[in-house]
Length: 108
Image (cartoon, rainbow, N blue to C red; front, side, top):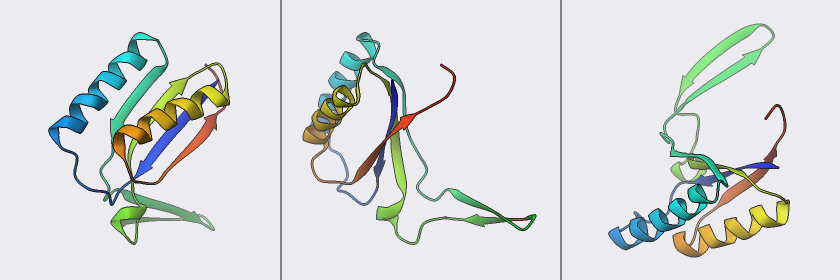
């Protein structure tokens, strides 16, 4: 089962200790073969809207920085419960914030 976990912005800036602890967590998940991809996203982004055959391109799709998705992780795990447990570990490292987890369907 694959899950996409995303984190929204607006939280405090990370410090060196957080980077070190997160680095260990990412290394552990990578060695276990659970972490397929991870990365940060530009919070400004570009919104693309299609309606009635018209395509509209708009800079900065989010009204507030805290609404922007700023990072993601793609996991491959045995169950939703395993994904939730990894998410709990992530948030214990990060601290306060908001994110989402969605199962990914499709070819593997």
